[in-house]
Image (cartoon, rainbow, N blue to C red; front, side, top):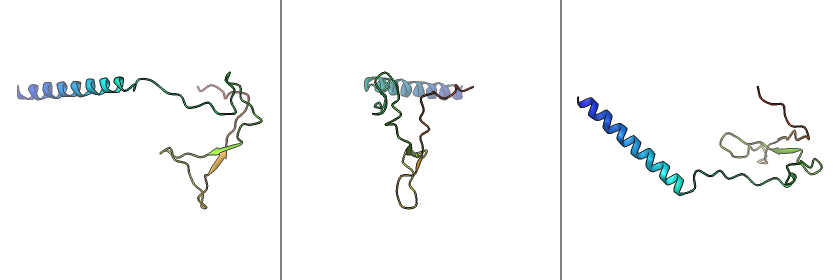
Length: 90
């Protein structure tokens, strides 16, 4: 019987914390997604201007920071930007 009370107390506390967290996120606008700004080489209709698109872009690590080479410069990788979209994932 005592184990049932502990389980009920744990579930009630978990539900209260989850509900409170969701309420705070909703109040702060946490449910809205903000899109990054459109690159300057992409028109408003989504058309890519290849003449101004970058040939290389900085490599980014899993922490979101730019990777650096031995001299401290951003490590660059080919952008592979083209007019044709990539094939769909299977």
